[in-house]
Length: 331
Image (cartoon, rainbow, N blue to C red; front, side):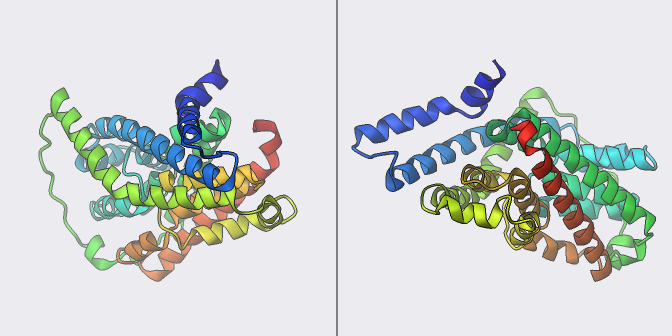
């Protein structure tokens, strides 16, 4: 029953069969390179955008109960490691990419929340949102998805705690540390209002994400049907002990959210790349993308930015090697 749910509901295998039948009726061989590429592209684009719409609708509805001011008040009630855990969990119901999380991070920091707490939020928000849990389940199964999310939260909590212990408050730009916040009364929303706002978020996010989905699926189709399996195994397989490090470094200059990296990860895994390598690439892209680091530099000084990058990169690499070690037990 669990396998059927993963394949037919989350994985939408029925959609792949329908598209394959349609392409075959048009005379395309889906077992060949061209037909296989078209099948991969159409199936993954439709599947990801359908799941994306449903997930954003659900998450945006939940998020309507946690506007920035309320989130700040919630975080302000906790102290120590409990505050870091709360911030990391709160990050799972906030925006889908690091660039959209940074304005919230700036607001929380300017409001006087502990620096380590705000960094726990900043790390977890793009890395382990609820959407990643569902999408990972659709591709890799529930075991991989749950472990990925748990380890992502661990990185967020540990990273935030380390930054707090380093007492780097002076490494935040002055305009943020000396800024003032004003409590804005939150309007009580009704069910219809929340649903309308959630749908508006679906439309807005889909427009922003769709180009990256197309690029990601296109790259995945090329990897899946045109790049020899031996090449992928040689570079990202078990014989290369530095595959995790390489995947993390390669992912940093890119900019995408998890919706754009899923098809690339799926294609790499099918070609023989190790699971830890694939997940390290995904974490690197979503957490340490170059555009988000440029934005973050506007808020923090180079020393703190370097500590943030080092902590995240080290955590991602450790997670990658951990998944490599347990791959045969969970897939």
